[in-house]
Image (cartoon, rainbow, N blue to C red; front, top):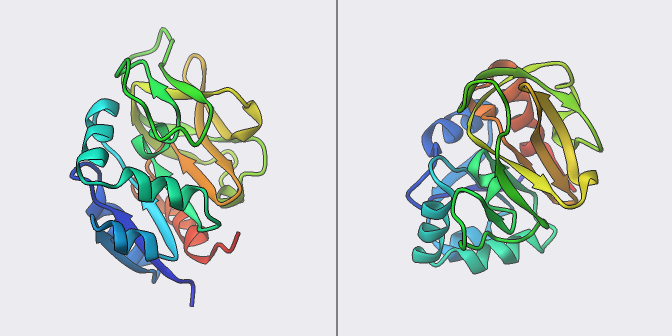
Length: 203
């Protein structure tokens, strides 16, 4: 038994495709906006699509900010996806003055490149430090859709990068908290493998 996974529903995010991909790997998974259900889950996934400010507003409106901070500071496996990675930082250039969850020190910044923004499509991962869920993903192509990326104060939490005319933070992680900027649920077999690794992960 790998434990109950709860996908956080705060009105924004690619919930159903993430849910479908997890069912594909045999996970015991549900979608919830209830702080009690999220707090009692064995593992938590925070997806996100849209704007940083809107997402933080919704987390606050749904009363989910405190339970997420509690989960992040526990030993429960946590996975942030796309904007779910960015929300783990202190703030974003996309929404000046809006506080993120602040688990990681650093800011989310607009991608500075001569290439087309948003960065959309397939890009190759280069693994960095202790990329727990990405063991077989080095050199593999995964699917991105974003205009901003995380710039951590502590570079050692960066677990993978990709090149898009500049180096982009593709994933971060520390202990029980791991997050990816790309969409594993849209990243073919390599993405499914990452979700399988999360299902089986025991920090």
